[in-house]
Length: 263
Image (tube, rainbow, N blue to C red; front, side, top):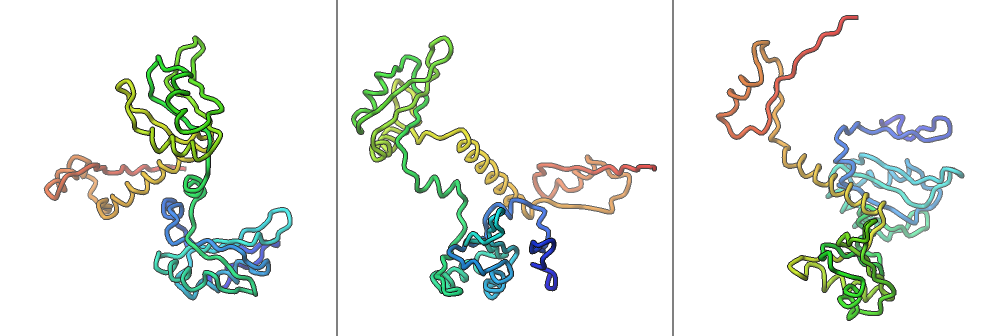
């Protein structure tokens, strides 16, 4: 790593780092710093050397245009701990690097950035009764601003699917409707009212939620999962469970079988 990291091979600098087999650590963004407004002369090694003064760097990358091979002017540095990342941000944000003032901040995933800042006019409504009509939607949402369209989704037989969309002329009206109507009760049904999302955006959000839940489960199990080896051949799963049950509730227990292959 010390001698060969960022060495060019076939015109591209290689990156060498310790293998991290648990993808949740990489994807969590822990200790990950985003840098923009970099001078195009700053490469991976220069970026690494600049940030290595603040702690152990796990990964370092300058974004490169695949067609030209030139720097895109931004990059990422991941430290092994959050304190190093915060210290680097404190010391380098707003500083001049090669006569250009750089921005240095914590990396925020695109999905989080979108949810926090985007304006919208199209509102998604669900969980109303089957008797709810387009006119009912107009009446319910009309007090929050000018509506350009309001539609209840229907199946092939013309029956309501109990969700619909309301599009406002103004983003402020849409935001007000979401804030005031989400969670309200109509005909004994609790409405969900939120920003209408494209399919790809919903899938990305669901994927991020599942990944976060997986990370949470992993963190919860840290220190609670035991590995044993050198067991006698007579040990089976039941005997192993009996041996450890006196120390607390066991959620899973397994003795792995050894398979032999002859070639």
